[in-house]
Amino acid sequence: MLMPKRIAIFTDDPGWHGKQLCLAFNLRGYQAEYVSLTACRLAIAAHKFPVVIPGFEQELPAAVFVRGVPGGSLQEVVFYLDVLHALKLLGVPVYNDGRAIEKSVDKGMTSFLLHTQDIATPVTWVNRERDFILAVAEQELSEGRMLLTKPLFGSQGEGIRRLEKSSDLLWLTSSQGIYYLQRFVACAGHEFSDMRVFVINGQAVAGMWRKGVSWLNNVARGARCEALDISTAIAELAVKAAQCLEMDYAGIDIMLDQDEMPIVIEVNSIPAWKGLQSVTCVNVAQLMVDDLINRYLNPQQDHYDA
Ligand SMILES: Nc1ncnc2c1ncn2[C@@H]1O[C@H](COP(=O)(O)OP(=O)(O)O)[C@@H](O)[C@H]1O
Ligand SMILES: [Mg+2]
Image 1 (tube, rainbow, N blue to C red):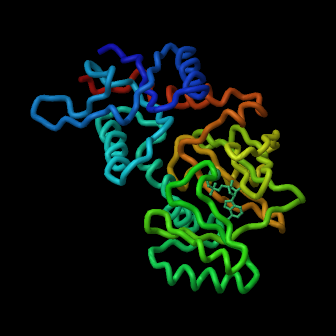
Image 2 (image 1 turned 120 degrees about the vertical axis):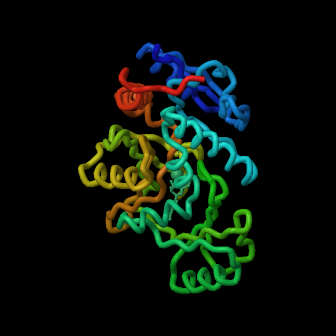
């Protein structure tokens, strides 16, 4: 059987990242094509192929690279994850797979998993009851701590609010019915900063400082990227966080608190790397593509043909 040499990149917005991935796949002799998860189908019927990916009707891709999972209703998101799970069950490598994406797309589950693996992460409450959250927030504020509320499925700093004083509780809102409340961690030093460490197959391959214009250090919110020399301790922490969520590759957000103790804020299963690429000399896309090909697409592996 001939090895299929075509890769599907799931994305609705290929842009710079899509191009980087295509180039990296081309360099390894693979052709990559962009596909939207919104256009995929499950077709459950006798003698029919059960997953239909536009452009791959005759033969499934050799692997899929997940660059984006669209938002939507719970049903839509579950369906997109179903497609990822189904592909994996059919023997198609999915990079990162549906389980890893599921665990990290939900900030509540990420916080829980980090905590249960003894990875330092901020004190967090997740629940449905407004009264409970208000009582916790009042207590915390009265003890002089600030808090953040975050949307459970948020990214790029969207929808994160800081509660600084009790009058801020007036506009405390849930994210689709669920409150995610977290202690604010004041960072070390005089600037606003956190670290983004990129982990691939259990190795911290690149990192950067993100220096925010305010306490929100996302690049999408205007944070400046600066080169970071990753210490052994930070590398180990980032690798442990990626492994805790079983990710092939991950972008780990780490803050240093005022005692310089590292705290894992977030583990991203679909991290962007444009800012990071501007301050590192390794080719991030190529490292991911090489890892995917070397570990999952060796010539001995059998593939499920349509
Ligand atoms: N508990 C916290 N204390 C202080 N700053 C935080 C905390 N949580 C998040 N931040 C800041 O907000 C940014 C975005 O938060 P994060 O949880 O990573 O959400 P997103 O998925 O939107 O990136 C972080 O990079 C960090 O700068
Ligand atoms: Mg983040």
